[in-house]
Length: 146
Image 1: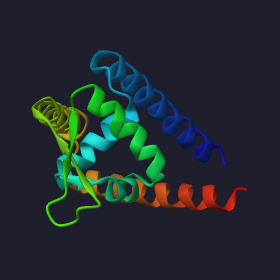
Image 2: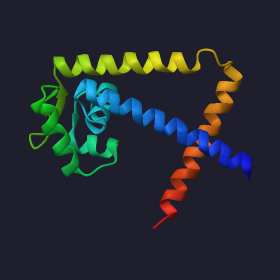
Image 3: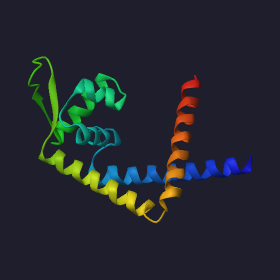
């Protein structure tokens, strides 16, 4: 049992380090984690409806409206008419938003290299598989907890 708790302690330490880094990022960028996540999704998908963003972020439409309102106010996105559905609008990154998305991608890739470039491919594959299993197990446990 001791190996299990020692491993969990390391995971929790990693979670604390990630949370500290996210807090630093929020302070420096002026963006919340949720707004950053929305920009990340826009970077991957391009202009999107608020409904599709809500699905991608696993949040309510109301929640996305608040996130988009904040990003419109900060100049990161705009709402544009949908080209084929007059009832819908597209959330579209502005030049400021595109620059933020590029910066997010660059820093993500840089951190991945810093953390894992020294790890042999075989060990990295085992680590990634173990993380996948751990995340899936934790998600299942969270669903089972009332």
